[in-house]
Amino acid sequence: MQTQEPMAIGASVAPKINTLSSSWRATVTPWLHATRAVLPTFLLTRLLFLILSYFGGILFFVPNYSPAPLSLRAMLHTWYHWDAIRYATIATKGYPSLDFAAFFPLYPALERALYLTTHRNILAIGMLISNLAFLGTLIVFYRFVEVEFDNTTAQRSVFYLSIFPTAFFFFAAYNESLFLLLMLLSFYSMRHRHWWFAGLFGGLATLTRSLGLFLALIFLYEFARQQWLPLLQAWHERHFPTLLRLLSSVIPVIFIPLGLGIYAAALNVRFHDPLAFQHAQIYWRLGLHFPWDAPLIALHGILTQPHFSFTVAHDLIDLSALVLFSVLLLLCFVGPERLLRSQWSFALFGILALTFSILFPGVPAPNGLPYDPMPSLQRFVLEIFVGFILLARLGRRPWFHQGYLLFSLPLLAFFTFQFITGHWTV
Image (cartoon, rainbow, N blue to C red; front, side, top):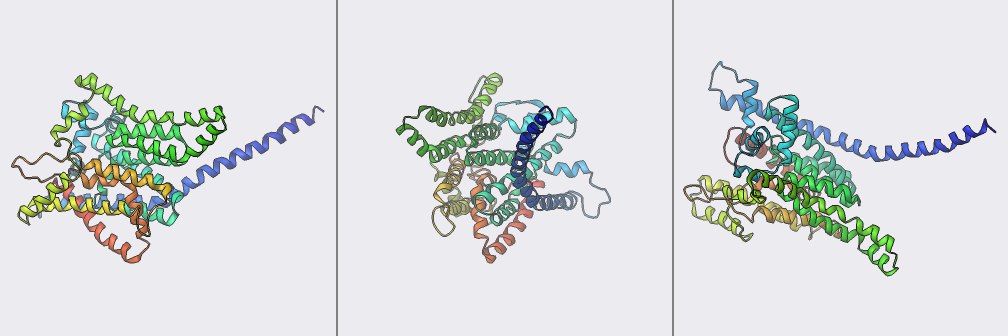
């Protein structure tokens, strides 16, 4: 009997080990597949930006026929503009004045943590974080779209996102990559009923960008859509333990506004103003307006200013981005590529993001010209991930796919050169 008991124990443990191993493989394998699927796109686009940085840095900053070389540091610092400078300042010196409060803290906090650990160039650290976060974004985005649609749509979605004309912000030391990664992780968790992860990632997204606060509405929408019938059934059957268990799943939504609360508390310590992030907007934007005001200001500038002026060219870019994503959001509900009703939360977040981006028109230029009534709109549309899913679905048509490539790639190169040479286009 003593010799049989260990064998019995071993026999009972072995199936459990095999089950755990199979479960682990089943969980990890799709993510490894997603990583392999997006890696070529990620590496090739990073190579593209390095090539553009090399030739742009030399040919735009070294005088013609000059024998003097450009240093690697100088080439790197062609990416050191605007918000990248702000984030680097926050990472190294904290929030020096009220206008910096408009920049949420998670991204510069990561910069600071790596800076104190490695003592490397702060711009290089910021770009490293941005690019690693973008790799994570592509992996999660691919997996998300693969589950919701199919792997062909997933492949095109990540590809179209990677070569969008303003996708260079995923290479620069900006927080776009980090926010998009956390937002997609929150969405993915909601769709799979991992409510605690959804709340946690949503809270981190809110610490990265104020737009993350809208994830609380998406959380409640998805919770109601997925749990409403089980809640009703538990209520009618008076099965209160099940009812309480289901209702407890909504608790993690509090993490999303908590992210904003944490930042507000820190600002209260620094500036004695918990709403400093909102009050700082006076340096960048006008107050709250109707959503049609900013587009009308841009349209008025196009119609009244000289056609070959900076104002008209800039406003045309803004309006083009607005019209494109407005049409894509409309196509989420009508037409052959419309989403399933169960997927409407994707479009709802896109509508909230696009509307929010035009509620606060930009402060006019010192000469009064409305050169930037919808500031950073071309960058903010990168977070409307459902737009890229719609583009990918449209991309099944060869003519559309070829047209997207012919427009996006040259514009991506052009806007990248505009950015590294310090010209204010986007």
